[in-house]
Image 1 (cartoon, rainbow, N blue to C red):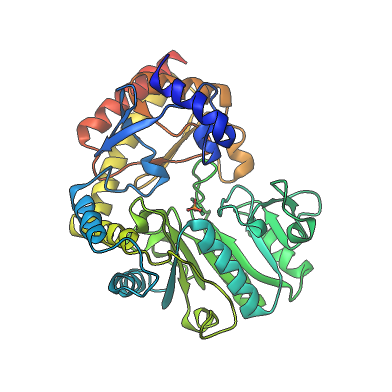
Image 2 (cartoon, rainbow, N blue to C red):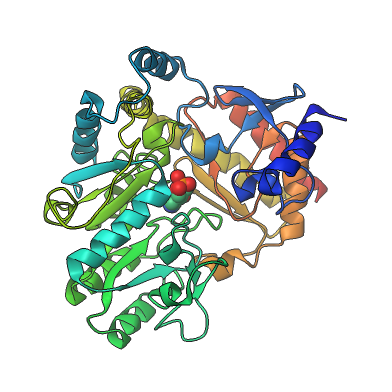
Amino acid sequence: MTKSSELFARAQKRIPGGVNSPVRAFRNVGGEPWFVARGEGARIWDVDGNEYVDYVGSWGPAILGHAPKVMVDAVRDAATRGLSFGISNPLEVEMAELICEWVPSIEKVRMVNSGTEATMSCVRLARAFTGRDKIIKFDGCYHGHADPLLVKSGSGALTHGHASSAGVPRAFADLTISLPFNNAELVKKAFQENKNQIAAVIVEAIPANAGLYFPRDNFLSALREECTRNGALLIFDEVITGFRVARGGAQEIYGVMPDLTALGKIIGGGLPVGAFGGRAEIMDQLSPDGSVYQAGTLSGNPLALAAGLTQLRELERINGWKLLEHLGLHLEELARAAIKDAKLDVTFHRLGSLFCLFFAAGPIHDLAGAQTSDLKMFTKFFWGCLKRGVYFAPSQFETGFISTSHTPGDIQRTGTVVRDVLAEL
Ligand SMILES: *Cc1c(COP(=O)(O)O)cnc(C)c1O
């Protein structure tokens, strides 16, 4: 019996499903999950001593790779001065200034402890600011697990949604409209059918939680126009894309300014963090200045901010975005050549350090397209790569993450593994 399977047996007795977040249970690929012992750079080791090149990177935060010395030093240094106070600390001001400088749509920002808290707070703020209750989201976009956002489309999608989780009251789901991504016509119709009722449109500007696909020409600017015309707020969930796809996130790439932005993952460098920010007149509705309540015992935690600030500054110092594009392009070239030679219907998507392989002919530009992927093929691909020491996310409906610690040699080796595995499918 491996140490991993022994731990998993114990975990299943005391932790629901044996995991603290469902995707870790490997249910989408079958088999048992393994337990990690440590990581360094682009490598991780399981508790049985097996080594992998990691393309999950903690689902996004580890953009510099695992345990980079500058960050470990910064966290250690902060820790010696105290773990948490519940009193304002200087790092909060530094982080707020950095976020506002790098993301011009953000004039004021508040720190929270997860992406879920960030999107949840954006929705509450938008409802208060507009005096309206309904929100529009998109199928396949994930915004954490707050009640108003665990909703998918059903019949009558233009007027109300269906809870995608048990325990979400019907009355809450009725206030959320979930539409297919990349269909601006339906957004327009939903606004017409719910006149003066829509508080906000929330969207992953680059959806990276159902595989990875991209907004079509003008989709994001159409959302901007519809929101402005109808007096609703546009919320970009940049929990994955913020500071990853560009210094100013997806909004910099597409040139569309949201009213509010949710951030997370990278800004905590692997410690639990989220943030949300936007136009000052909206953010000023938060207590203590305004009437929208929002708070957090650990918000602005000095360890998390030391990790996050150090990571962001290091990323800028080494021009990480250019390096990531370079590494991403290298992986893309190898993967495309391997796909071509394997003569398989595979759609490869990439933007900078984000990438995804769908086992479908494509084109894929929404959840329905992503769901055409052959999941049996994906499962074989996943295990084939894992056996050869390359760890991709254990689900088709996730995205691959490259870090600045991946070396050209790691990428080359990954390309060879992908080639060998695809050839065997
Ligand atoms: C991960 C994620 C969230 C939720 O963040 P948590 O820190 O897991 O609560 C929200 N939105 C997007 C786009 C994410 O990828």
